Image (cartoon, rainbow, N blue to C red; front, side, top):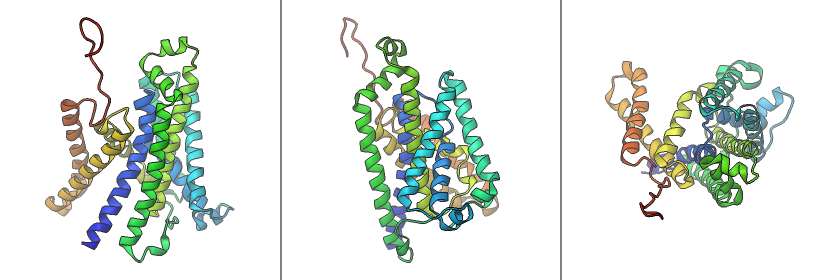
Length: 317
């Protein structure tokens, strides 16, 4: 029973970290309409930034010193946000499909740098011994997992409340206006490009924060953690929970992660050992099937906003 509680805390911590990434994507896509398929790259930037700033062994190797975890998280947000801003500055004039290709390229570049900059990132061996919050409790797994869950929950709650405030602010209303009718928003004197770069940078910063939190939760990162599958998972989470809803982003993260873990456990239990490497793809199939069912039954997701239909005689239905 105690082990089950410890695992539940770890499961929820991981789900909330994915929820953080989905919140960043919701700001970019759900609120602003920016099609980002380079999610894994911005998460990787945040994770490696925080790991390099805070891990003593790595910091000594690059001529620095291990900083507090909070400083690493702040650095992760700044660098990931800056990378997103530069990407947006260079690409947001492009149409949706070209923007998607460009952001995917950013993710590939980030992973290749992590894989080949061996002296800095450890290359394929990754970065180990990353400081973990409440590391002194590591000998007590249940207490350790619940303590870290409290930290992740606090970070997620603060981020959620901040994004809720931004969404309802005049800034958020401008972003929604640009998504719905750019010409009307521009005619009112709003700079479409400036607002979109701001939204893209803010979303990238949230993704970087999520990567940093995950790096310190696990204590180890490697390039293989930031593959396109991560981007697929986060998009599925946002679509299931409801694009345009911060609450939906968090709910979708928990539901999709539960399906992902459940499919993995079922595969491990039913598939012979020699076929399990190939059968791991069934997790992606399970998420795809669930996504199709949700989109057919409720296209706006669990908490996505529904569009009201106009009555024939005027007004809303």
